[in-house]
Image (cartoon, rainbow, N blue to C red; front, side, top):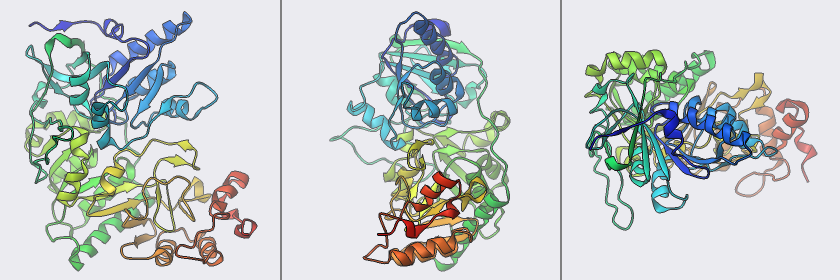
Length: 500
């Protein structure tokens, strides 16, 4: 059956007010670009007529500005999950005075199955980016997979943005596999990082496919360069790994690495590559960044499994030119496979993720600023942290020119509890929390991770609240945050003011 080709405007007209729309991609990688922009225009037109027009959005993770930004600015979003990084989307989520977006922050590995379970209202339309679509209904994703298999199967209509800028030669790099639902679910047959268990395409009934041709450019920006602080964090992590190998706690052949997104993650990977005592290793992660490809070219990384190629535009162009090199060294999977806790525990993955703040007992806040404003979301950090062989969190010790301490008496929002966090690293050192009780953990974190300017205050907090199994004082535990809100500097915290 011949495929139905339509314009982006015609595709947007297929989407109705109150529809739930699933989008492909994971970060900006693999996200549709032209249909969301047309959908935003349509929403603005409907609003100008006095008509309501909002949709629910499911994605693999965050997306590009063409999707999250355009639709947020058009006030076209009623519901958003599971993760976002766009400034306009974030502002709309946090602004309760102006028709806020309902934002559901969820572990990325869980979203596809919760959509299938019917917990989130179903999928009306799927909009996916592809580098190839055949007349038999084989859709080959581009640089990000996310929840594409699930939304394509469940949606009544599948709109395919066929992007000619992405070479068809990308076919073969994907491993598309969708889990069975309980009670029929079986184990996932991935026993090595390079294992493949699925198809190289998503199979869809051609009767529900509509194709929009495009040549839209990748929306990858440049990462913030590694600076003195992030470089030192990277060195501390690499040296800690070498120490763990010498003790025998990490095998001499090393273990697969998962690394979050951003400049600190790039700094950590770079430091590992520069450390001659760390052997060639594998990566089993969600987001594959520029640094990973560079290390693969240099021979530091032997194989990489992920969900998306979250690359700068320059790195993406180089990747396409080097496809012959990467084809047998890299695989892209759906997020419920790339982030699956079963596989994380089986392969013994070392998880490295970033914290907004950590408290002196090892609890981590990775989502909220001052406990109230959503930053981005939990993403895949929880998928890896709880099941990792070694769970590592990294953060600069301070923010806002030293006026905010990333090490506090109590986190204002808890995403990862002390029970799951094994290692905490800042530019000042490494706190090993394994096997330590609350008092020992507090001493370890204060002395090895906190900025020197804040260590006296943190020690004072412990000494003033010494009581019970965990020295936590519910009156004074947020004194740091209160001081910042009142004076703009956490160093002005007056702990005794709150003690009763």
